[in-house]
Length: 356
Image 1 (cartoon, rainbow, N blue to C red):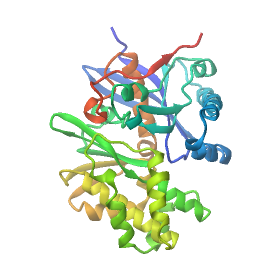
Image 2: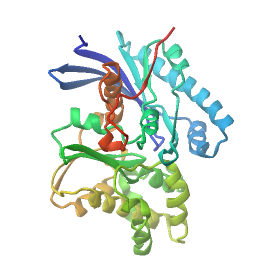
Image 3: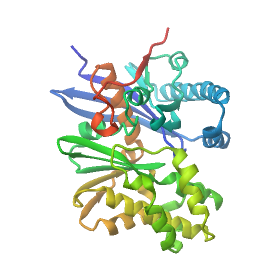
Image 4: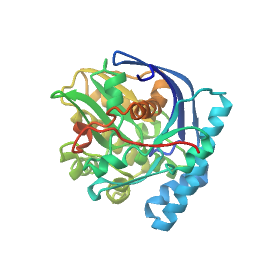
Protein backbone atom coordinates (compact mmCIF):
# COMPACT_ATOMS: atom_id res chain seq x y z
CA UNK A 1 0.00 0.00 0.00
CA UNK A 2 1.61 3.27 -1.13
CA UNK A 3 1.50 6.56 0.72
CA UNK A 4 -1.24 8.88 -0.50
CA UNK A 5 0.69 11.99 0.51
CA UNK A 6 4.36 12.71 -0.13
CA UNK A 7 6.45 15.58 1.15
CA UNK A 8 9.55 16.00 -1.01
CA UNK A 9 12.01 18.61 -2.24
CA UNK A 10 12.58 19.06 -5.96
CA UNK A 11 15.95 20.48 -7.01
CA UNK A 12 16.81 21.73 -10.52
CA UNK A 13 19.76 23.53 -12.08
CA UNK A 14 19.22 24.55 -15.69
CA UNK A 15 21.53 25.36 -18.57
CA UNK A 16 20.77 29.08 -18.29
CA UNK A 17 22.91 29.08 -15.10
CA UNK A 18 20.61 31.44 -13.22
CA UNK A 19 20.92 29.29 -10.09
CA UNK A 20 19.64 26.24 -8.26
CA UNK A 21 15.85 26.06 -7.90
CA UNK A 22 14.52 24.31 -4.79
CA UNK A 23 10.84 23.60 -4.12
CA UNK A 24 9.38 21.82 -1.10
CA UNK A 25 6.23 20.16 -2.43
CA UNK A 26 3.40 18.14 -0.94
CA UNK A 27 1.80 15.73 -3.41
CA UNK A 28 -1.51 14.03 -2.83
CA UNK A 29 -2.63 11.14 -5.04
CA UNK A 30 -6.10 9.58 -5.02
CA UNK A 31 -7.32 7.17 -7.72
CA UNK A 32 -4.33 8.19 -9.89
CA UNK A 33 -5.37 11.85 -9.70
CA UNK A 34 -2.49 13.98 -8.50
CA UNK A 35 -2.54 17.39 -6.86
CA UNK A 36 0.30 19.46 -5.47
CA UNK A 37 1.03 22.30 -3.11
CA UNK A 38 4.36 24.16 -3.21
CA UNK A 39 5.15 24.77 0.46
CA UNK A 40 8.43 26.69 0.16
CA UNK A 41 10.64 27.66 -2.74
CA UNK A 42 13.91 29.47 -3.36
CA UNK A 43 16.47 30.07 -6.11
CA UNK A 44 20.08 30.13 -4.93
CA UNK A 45 22.28 32.02 -7.38
CA UNK A 46 25.68 30.73 -8.44
CA UNK A 47 28.82 32.70 -7.63
CA UNK A 48 30.68 34.13 -10.62
CA UNK A 49 33.35 31.46 -10.08
CA UNK A 50 30.79 28.66 -10.34
CA UNK A 51 29.12 30.20 -13.40
CA UNK A 52 32.47 30.27 -15.17
CA UNK A 53 33.33 26.70 -14.16
CA UNK A 54 29.98 25.34 -15.34
CA UNK A 55 30.30 27.21 -18.64
CA UNK A 56 33.83 25.90 -19.24
CA UNK A 57 33.26 22.33 -18.02
CA UNK A 58 32.30 21.07 -21.48
CA UNK A 59 36.03 21.39 -22.35
CA UNK A 60 37.36 19.69 -19.17
CA UNK A 61 39.40 16.49 -19.10
CA UNK A 62 37.90 13.42 -17.43
CA UNK A 63 40.06 13.97 -14.33
CA UNK A 64 39.00 17.61 -14.06
CA UNK A 65 35.33 16.65 -14.56
CA UNK A 66 35.56 14.10 -11.74
CA UNK A 67 36.94 16.77 -9.41
CA UNK A 68 34.22 19.21 -10.51
CA UNK A 69 31.60 16.55 -9.79
CA UNK A 70 33.00 16.08 -6.27
CA UNK A 71 33.04 19.83 -5.62
CA UNK A 72 29.59 20.42 -7.09
CA UNK A 73 28.11 17.58 -5.01
CA UNK A 74 29.46 19.30 -1.88
CA UNK A 75 28.04 22.65 -3.02
CA UNK A 76 24.62 21.21 -3.93
CA UNK A 77 24.37 19.09 -0.77
CA UNK A 78 25.16 22.13 1.37
CA UNK A 79 22.56 24.28 -0.40
CA UNK A 80 19.85 21.62 0.04
CA UNK A 81 20.77 21.15 3.72
CA UNK A 82 20.59 24.92 4.29
CA UNK A 83 17.17 25.06 2.55
CA UNK A 84 15.80 22.36 4.86
CA UNK A 85 17.15 24.16 7.93
CA UNK A 86 16.05 27.65 6.82
CA UNK A 87 12.41 26.61 6.31
CA UNK A 88 12.39 24.08 9.19
CA UNK A 89 11.19 21.32 6.86
CA UNK A 90 10.18 18.21 8.79
CA UNK A 91 9.30 14.65 7.74
CA UNK A 92 10.77 14.89 4.23
CA UNK A 93 10.25 11.64 2.30
CA UNK A 94 13.05 12.38 -0.16
CA UNK A 95 15.03 15.03 -1.98
CA UNK A 96 14.61 14.62 -5.75
CA UNK A 97 17.54 16.26 -7.52
CA UNK A 98 18.33 16.70 -11.19
CA UNK A 99 21.94 17.85 -10.74
CA UNK A 100 23.53 20.01 -13.44
CA UNK A 101 24.04 18.86 -17.03
CA UNK A 102 27.61 19.23 -18.24
CA UNK A 103 27.71 16.87 -21.22
CA UNK A 104 24.73 15.61 -23.19
CA UNK A 105 25.62 13.37 -26.13
CA UNK A 106 22.86 10.76 -26.44
CA UNK A 107 24.00 9.99 -29.99
CA UNK A 108 27.21 8.70 -28.36
CA UNK A 109 25.33 6.93 -25.55
CA UNK A 110 26.48 9.45 -22.98
CA UNK A 111 25.07 12.10 -20.65
CA UNK A 112 26.57 13.60 -17.50
CA UNK A 113 24.76 15.42 -14.72
CA UNK A 114 27.09 16.40 -11.88
CA UNK A 115 25.99 16.57 -8.24
CA UNK A 116 24.59 13.01 -8.21
CA UNK A 117 27.30 11.25 -6.22
CA UNK A 118 26.24 8.96 -3.32
CA UNK A 119 27.83 11.25 -0.71
CA UNK A 120 25.03 13.80 -1.25
CA UNK A 121 22.75 11.65 0.92
CA UNK A 122 25.24 11.92 3.81
CA UNK A 123 25.57 15.70 3.39
CA UNK A 124 21.81 16.32 3.29
CA UNK A 125 20.96 13.66 5.87
CA UNK A 126 17.96 12.22 4.04
CA UNK A 127 17.03 9.93 1.13
CA UNK A 128 18.04 11.26 -2.29
CA UNK A 129 16.51 10.33 -5.65
CA UNK A 130 18.65 11.57 -8.53
CA UNK A 131 20.45 10.89 -11.84
CA UNK A 132 17.26 10.57 -13.88
CA UNK A 133 18.77 10.73 -17.39
CA UNK A 134 21.49 8.05 -17.58
CA UNK A 135 19.23 4.98 -17.68
CA UNK A 136 17.20 6.39 -20.55
CA UNK A 137 20.32 6.95 -22.68
CA UNK A 138 21.41 3.35 -21.93
CA UNK A 139 17.99 2.24 -23.24
CA UNK A 140 18.65 4.07 -26.51
CA UNK A 141 16.78 7.25 -25.59
CA UNK A 142 17.71 10.91 -25.72
CA UNK A 143 17.70 11.19 -21.93
CA UNK A 144 15.52 14.25 -22.48
CA UNK A 145 13.14 15.86 -22.10
CA UNK A 146 11.97 14.33 -18.81
CA UNK A 147 9.38 16.94 -17.82
CA UNK A 148 6.56 15.74 -20.17
CA UNK A 149 5.24 13.01 -17.87
CA UNK A 150 4.76 15.76 -15.27
CA UNK A 151 2.97 17.88 -17.86
CA UNK A 152 0.62 14.96 -18.52
CA UNK A 153 -0.03 14.22 -14.84
CA UNK A 154 -0.21 17.77 -13.41
CA UNK A 155 -1.08 20.08 -16.34
CA UNK A 156 -3.44 18.15 -18.61
CA UNK A 157 -5.77 21.17 -18.88
CA UNK A 158 -3.33 22.78 -21.36
CA UNK A 159 -2.98 21.72 -24.99
CA UNK A 160 0.74 22.49 -25.01
CA UNK A 161 3.36 23.01 -22.29
CA UNK A 162 6.35 25.13 -23.33
CA UNK A 163 9.38 25.82 -21.16
CA UNK A 164 11.74 28.67 -22.06
CA UNK A 165 15.02 28.13 -20.22
CA UNK A 166 18.55 27.68 -21.49
CA UNK A 167 16.79 25.74 -24.24
CA UNK A 168 13.10 25.55 -25.08
CA UNK A 169 11.13 22.35 -24.95
CA UNK A 170 7.52 21.52 -25.62
CA UNK A 171 5.18 18.67 -24.79
CA UNK A 172 1.67 17.72 -25.91
CA UNK A 173 -0.59 14.74 -26.53
CA UNK A 174 -0.59 13.29 -30.04
CA UNK A 175 -1.51 9.92 -31.55
CA UNK A 176 -2.33 8.48 -28.10
CA UNK A 177 1.17 9.29 -26.89
CA UNK A 178 2.86 12.18 -25.15
CA UNK A 179 5.14 13.91 -27.64
CA UNK A 180 7.96 16.19 -26.53
CA UNK A 181 11.27 17.50 -27.72
CA UNK A 182 13.73 20.35 -27.41
CA UNK A 183 12.92 23.14 -29.86
CA UNK A 184 15.89 25.52 -29.87
CA UNK A 185 18.42 27.31 -27.68
CA UNK A 186 16.95 30.30 -25.84
CA UNK A 187 18.74 31.87 -22.86
CA UNK A 188 22.02 30.05 -23.54
CA UNK A 189 22.37 32.35 -26.55
CA UNK A 190 20.51 35.49 -25.42
CA UNK A 191 22.38 35.57 -22.08
CA UNK A 192 25.69 35.05 -23.89
CA UNK A 193 25.16 38.28 -25.80
CA UNK A 194 23.67 40.15 -22.84
CA UNK A 195 26.84 39.22 -20.90
CA UNK A 196 28.92 40.85 -23.66
CA UNK A 197 27.06 44.07 -22.88
CA UNK A 198 27.87 43.69 -19.17
CA UNK A 199 24.39 42.46 -18.22
CA UNK A 200 23.23 39.15 -16.73
CA UNK A 201 20.26 38.93 -19.11
CA UNK A 202 18.10 40.96 -21.49
CA UNK A 203 15.49 42.44 -19.13
CA UNK A 204 12.03 42.05 -20.73
CA UNK A 205 13.78 41.65 -24.12
CA UNK A 206 14.34 45.40 -24.42
CA UNK A 207 17.84 45.04 -25.90
CA UNK A 208 16.58 42.59 -28.51
CA UNK A 209 13.67 44.90 -29.29
CA UNK A 210 16.10 47.77 -29.96
CA UNK A 211 18.01 45.83 -32.63
CA UNK A 212 17.37 45.21 -36.31
CA UNK A 213 16.48 41.90 -37.89
CA UNK A 214 19.15 40.38 -40.16
CA UNK A 215 17.24 38.20 -42.60
CA UNK A 216 20.32 36.40 -43.92
CA UNK A 217 21.33 35.30 -40.43
CA UNK A 218 17.74 34.34 -39.64
CA UNK A 219 17.55 32.17 -42.76
CA UNK A 220 20.83 30.45 -41.91
CA UNK A 221 19.69 29.74 -38.36
CA UNK A 222 16.37 28.33 -39.55
CA UNK A 223 18.20 26.12 -42.05
CA UNK A 224 20.27 24.31 -39.39
CA UNK A 225 19.96 20.54 -39.69
CA UNK A 226 18.55 20.02 -36.19
CA UNK A 227 15.28 21.78 -37.07
CA UNK A 228 14.51 19.38 -39.92
CA UNK A 229 15.00 16.28 -37.75
CA UNK A 230 11.93 14.47 -36.50
CA UNK A 231 11.43 13.89 -32.77
CA UNK A 232 12.53 12.48 -30.40
CA UNK A 233 15.42 14.92 -30.32
CA UNK A 234 17.23 16.96 -27.69
CA UNK A 235 19.87 19.66 -27.42
CA UNK A 236 22.93 20.22 -25.26
CA UNK A 237 25.27 23.15 -24.76
CA UNK A 238 27.62 21.55 -27.30
CA UNK A 239 25.11 22.54 -30.04
CA UNK A 240 25.33 26.19 -29.00
CA UNK A 241 29.11 26.22 -28.61
CA UNK A 242 29.99 24.30 -31.77
CA UNK A 243 27.22 25.31 -34.21
CA UNK A 244 25.02 28.24 -33.19
CA UNK A 245 27.54 30.77 -31.83
CA UNK A 246 30.09 30.24 -34.66
CA UNK A 247 27.27 30.81 -37.17
CA UNK A 248 26.12 34.05 -35.51
CA UNK A 249 29.70 35.26 -35.09
CA UNK A 250 30.24 35.11 -38.86
CA UNK A 251 28.11 38.25 -39.03
CA UNK A 252 29.75 41.60 -38.26
CA UNK A 253 26.59 43.20 -36.94
CA UNK A 254 25.64 44.88 -33.66
CA UNK A 255 24.97 42.67 -30.64
CA UNK A 256 21.44 44.12 -30.50
CA UNK A 257 20.87 42.93 -34.09
CA UNK A 258 22.14 39.45 -33.24
CA UNK A 259 19.78 39.30 -30.26
CA UNK A 260 16.74 40.51 -32.19
CA UNK A 261 17.44 38.04 -34.98
CA UNK A 262 17.90 35.16 -32.55
CA UNK A 263 14.70 36.12 -30.71
CA UNK A 264 12.82 35.97 -34.01
CA UNK A 265 14.44 32.59 -34.68
CA UNK A 266 13.18 31.24 -31.31
CA UNK A 267 9.64 32.51 -31.99
CA UNK A 268 9.60 31.12 -35.52
CA UNK A 269 10.87 27.68 -34.48
CA UNK A 270 8.40 27.55 -31.59
CA UNK A 271 5.45 28.19 -33.91
CA UNK A 272 6.80 25.72 -36.45
CA UNK A 273 7.00 22.99 -33.78
CA UNK A 274 3.29 23.25 -32.86
CA UNK A 275 1.13 21.02 -35.10
CA UNK A 276 -2.29 22.55 -34.40
CA UNK A 277 -1.88 26.26 -33.90
CA UNK A 278 -4.74 26.98 -31.57
CA UNK A 279 -5.76 26.05 -28.03
CA UNK A 280 -3.99 26.85 -24.75
CA UNK A 281 -0.20 27.08 -24.50
CA UNK A 282 1.29 27.17 -20.97
CA UNK A 283 4.62 29.02 -20.94
CA UNK A 284 7.08 28.68 -18.05
CA UNK A 285 10.80 29.25 -17.47
CA UNK A 286 12.81 32.46 -17.27
CA UNK A 287 12.21 33.25 -20.93
CA UNK A 288 8.54 33.89 -20.14
CA UNK A 289 9.66 37.24 -18.65
CA UNK A 290 11.02 38.25 -22.06
CA UNK A 291 8.10 40.38 -23.23
CA UNK A 292 9.56 40.93 -26.70
CA UNK A 293 9.99 37.17 -27.23
CA UNK A 294 6.40 36.49 -26.09
CA UNK A 295 5.12 39.19 -28.48
CA UNK A 296 6.98 37.59 -31.38
CA UNK A 297 5.55 34.17 -30.45
CA UNK A 298 2.05 35.61 -30.40
CA UNK A 299 2.71 37.15 -33.83
CA UNK A 300 3.59 33.71 -35.24
CA UNK A 301 0.72 32.02 -33.32
CA UNK A 302 -2.17 34.51 -33.71
CA UNK A 303 -4.93 32.02 -32.81
CA UNK A 304 -3.14 30.44 -29.83
CA UNK A 305 -3.93 31.51 -26.25
CA UNK A 306 -0.58 32.06 -24.53
CA UNK A 307 -0.85 31.55 -20.78
CA UNK A 308 1.89 32.76 -18.44
CA UNK A 309 1.19 31.59 -14.87
CA UNK A 310 2.13 33.26 -11.58
CA UNK A 311 5.82 33.59 -10.77
CA UNK A 312 5.81 30.57 -8.45
CA UNK A 313 4.82 28.12 -11.17
CA UNK A 314 6.67 30.02 -13.90
CA UNK A 315 10.00 29.79 -12.06
CA UNK A 316 9.66 26.50 -10.19
CA UNK A 317 7.77 24.21 -12.57
CA UNK A 318 10.85 22.14 -13.40
CA UNK A 319 11.80 21.73 -9.72
CA UNK A 320 8.17 20.74 -9.07
CA UNK A 321 8.25 18.10 -11.81
CA UNK A 322 11.57 16.62 -10.74
CA UNK A 323 10.00 16.30 -7.29
CA UNK A 324 7.22 14.31 -8.98
CA UNK A 325 9.71 12.15 -10.93
CA UNK A 326 11.35 11.26 -7.62
CA UNK A 327 8.02 10.28 -6.04
CA UNK A 328 7.20 8.10 -9.06
CA UNK A 329 10.59 6.42 -8.60
CA UNK A 330 9.81 5.78 -4.93
CA UNK A 331 6.51 4.22 -6.03
CA UNK A 332 8.34 2.19 -8.72
CA UNK A 333 6.06 3.70 -11.38
CA UNK A 334 6.93 4.84 -14.89
CA UNK A 335 8.51 8.29 -14.86
CA UNK A 336 10.09 8.41 -18.34
CA UNK A 337 8.06 8.03 -21.55
CA UNK A 338 9.64 6.27 -24.53
CA UNK A 339 7.36 8.22 -26.89
CA UNK A 340 9.22 11.32 -25.72
CA UNK A 341 12.83 10.14 -25.44
CA UNK A 342 12.93 7.36 -28.05
CA UNK A 343 14.04 4.73 -25.51
CA UNK A 344 13.17 1.06 -26.07
CA UNK A 345 10.39 1.24 -23.49
CA UNK A 346 8.71 3.35 -20.84
CA UNK A 347 10.65 2.95 -17.62
CA UNK A 348 11.20 4.01 -14.03
CA UNK A 349 14.44 5.98 -13.94
CA UNK A 350 16.70 7.43 -11.28
CA UNK A 351 18.84 6.12 -8.47
CA UNK A 352 18.10 6.19 -4.74
CA UNK A 353 20.77 6.97 -2.18
CA UNK A 354 20.05 6.47 1.51
CA UNK A 355 22.09 7.99 4.31
CA UNK A 356 24.03 5.41 6.31
